[in-house]
Length: 154
Image 1 (cartoon, rainbow, N blue to C red):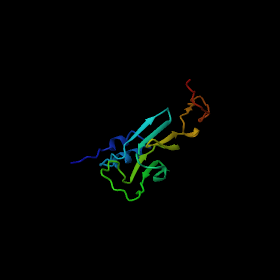
Image 2 (image 1 turned 90 degrees about the vertical axis):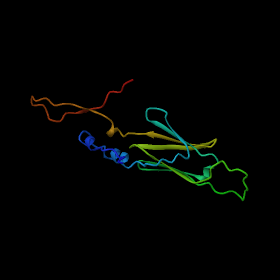
Image 3 (image 1 turned 45 degrees about the horizontal axis):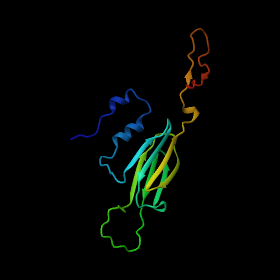
């Protein structure tokens, strides 16, 4: 049974999306659902990841940012020899990976009431933002005209 999609027709009409297609083709088949998390869009370019990490302290958690990858992990240190009658709070270690779009930056992380909150912002450099290109006329005008900055919508 084939579970992968064939993205080859999309290659004909797209340029520079190789990374996106590779992510889709190599997406993990098994999904680990622990610890639970939320991803919120707080503004046009502002995002927040909230991970439920009950029982973990700030010293037990690690958040790192690599190019196009956010990694949150936790390893709860065992407390003194405690005899549990029932143990319902998970104490296992975890690593949660989030693929990030280009130009995403982590601006902060906090731990409050058992929730690890990681704030992100997309900062697109000026040279990467859309711009208007003037089209030269055939009446002897120069081939390359000045480039205009896009108009900001209020």
